[in-house]
Image (cartoon, rainbow, N blue to C red):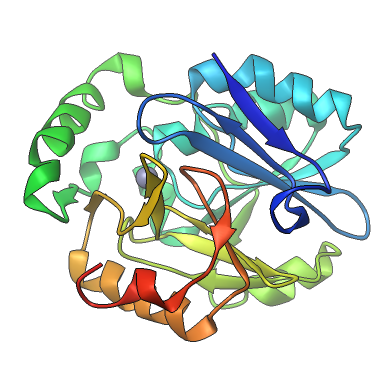
Length: 236
Ligand SMILES: [Zn+2]
């Protein structure tokens, strides 16, 4: 599997690891706090080995694992990494019941062209093959998430971005919005994510992102890109 990584260079000096798989490459990120480093998402089964290599090569000291939401292509390696690094897992409270239970928040295509994609994903996530290893989050994100982040030494703003899932959260740090699947890059094009639990809430969250107008958007799929208002116009 081909990977593309960047550490302190390239796009916005964002530390990202992108696994070039299919039309929606899987991206994870590392940000730093006072007492350690935070891994944002953990990728899927194929991500584990190359991601671990990247973490080791860069000497990241992972003390925290932030899950933007509890879909298997984001939380697949959370249990493994927690054990390996003795790290804390962070997850939005509304997504705790979504762990290993994809269909508890049924996904709806945001556009006609994604109907088959969503059917396919919904089928596979019902089988044992697409279930992440069990884990219980150590840090539950709720309305006090920012106090929690400060307590653990992170100068970040945690932003609720519901819609793709009920408990989707993003992180704003140094002008970069780590948005999870509240936005996406498919086939290299920034766009509305292909599916959501609530399309209405997803669009509200996109408006929120547009209002924040970060310098860069770092999504759960695709490489980070310069934010531009044009991606968030109503026809996007
Ligand atoms: Zn997702």
